[in-house]
Structures are given as C-alpha cells and as structure tokens.
Length: 157
Image 1: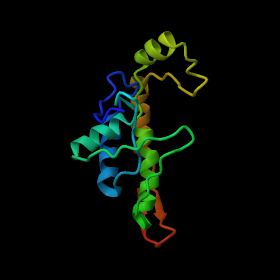
Image 2 (image 1 turned 180 degrees about the horizontal axis):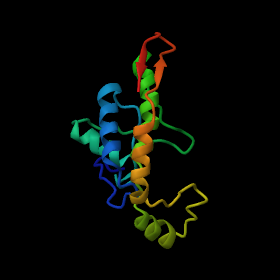
Image 3 (image 1 turned 120 degrees about the vertical axis):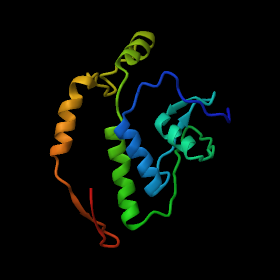
C-alpha cells in the first residue's frame, strides 16, 4: 500500500463552498470524526474533501490496513455538546457538500463500467437549476434548538 495519499483527479463530487466551509468548521470544533478510504495506489476513493481540509490544517494520516471482515472505528473523547455537534455535523456536511459531476459519472460509471447508477441510489440532478430553490429553502428554515441528553446544555443550529 502506498503511503502517499493523492486526491482522486476524477472525483465524482465537485463539492460546494458551503459544504467545504462546514467541513472545516466541524473539524475545528469537534475534530476528526470520519476517515478517508484510499486504494492500493494511495488514491482517495472516499474522502477527497476531508483530505483537502486535513492537508490544509497540517494533519498527518494514520494508516490502517483492514481484512475483508473488518471495519475501522474512530474512538474519540467526545462528550456532551461536542458529541451532539459531531453527530449533526457528520450528516449536515454530507448534505451540503454534495455536487455531482454528472458528466464524469456518465462517462466513467455508466459508459466505462456499465454501472446502473439508479440501482445504487445515484440521482442525476441539475444542481445549477436547484441552487436557488435550495438557498431559498435554507434561508426560510427556522433555527432549531437542541438540549444535550448528557449534560443538559442548550444550543441552536
């Protein structure tokens, strides 16, 4: 396995500015909560955005080689508000940082490998047409209040 990690030059996700900002904020506030996956040549399979932010912050990779029947576990000391924020960030970053390169998906997944992308849940969306409606929806959503079940601390997002 290569110890040099390279971004995937044909990453299907172009990402968004909002998503990248949220990712960086989440790493600043709660630390590393998700890993990246690389192939045997060291090219990122999943986690290109995380690698970009990790590199920007000067983080160093810790390599873990897995057998077919194993999965990685990241153990942290998160608790209270930080634990709740980590759980929320893990889902909201993914939601806001998805911007598929439809042409690349068509070229590689469909044409080169004949993958039925609908079968694996990929929806080809024209993001340019949906940006305005999503921004309007986001600006109209109300702030939500949460209470940490561990410490009782109240916070809003």
